Length: 461
Image: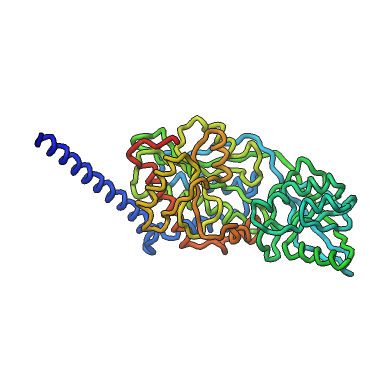
């Protein structure tokens, strides 16, 4: 009996010692990642910022299917090939239909004595055309139903309560305005503030025949004031967008897992952007792509081989949302792969403090444990259940039920900092912070390593 008790005691002590050793190894890996990224003398210090700046400065905005996008894809792929990953490849999406902007303008004719050009941007895929008419300002879809807008141009000047509610005006507003008899649509930029810079984005282009554009928050308020004081407002809208056939690619890199190579942790962002300014796409979502790439690169460079495979992806075509874009292509062609989780960074790269997760209860509990046990020292330990969805990872989840993860970063509840610059010329390297980007690399590399190297089976629920 004493022998059995001694044996059990010895087993428990050994198990605790092994766990202590494992904990120290894991903590050492996290520390090693942080020290390499945050050390000013290291080649990895500010590497994410510098790499992103090179692409942004060299190739400019990366509209899906454009020559800029194709060149940026090729450059990204060639750079990744030099990084020594276990596998690097591209996947062509086949023939796609994209859209180019063309000449466009909004001119205010009344009540101004001298015609005044307004800052504007055509909404994605808006039809080409020229319309001139009196403006009717409405603040809601309900008010649109109450007013006579036949033969007029509708201006939606809605109240900003976050992107989720505002995007309805950009997508559905032009359709509803035309159904009510309008000959064109202007929407207040989908943003908390616009700093005289209009915000673009997709609209329901298949169901409209007249131009649909965004104007600045400031000018939407100005037109509203004019109407309220009884002045007649007349504008002319010109748009010249055209659709065309082209192609594009998703870009991949992998570190192969040494024990469970068929279990895949996917992480990335979308490499395409809008075309508003000379640097549009720095934050949305060039920054997301690059911090994920740098996370994989630091793991590989340090010789850290986790038990499971970590796969990087630069999705193509998120902004235009077509059903043959990179996310749909990936889900259709890799949906049968055994995805453990899909991580996406697409809300900016300000300082991270944790992660959102959409997964079953047991998996959520596991990620919460790992984060609180090992990521407190880097300030990224907070986990937010049922809040891990992003656009491209969400498509994979719709196809396969794959759990989703995203980075939670410094901003307010409505992400007002992010949406101030979102889809505008203001989305540039000016808003990117090299220290914050480094912190994202550390946090993303750490959480992906922790999950990929977890000893036990990953819960399915």
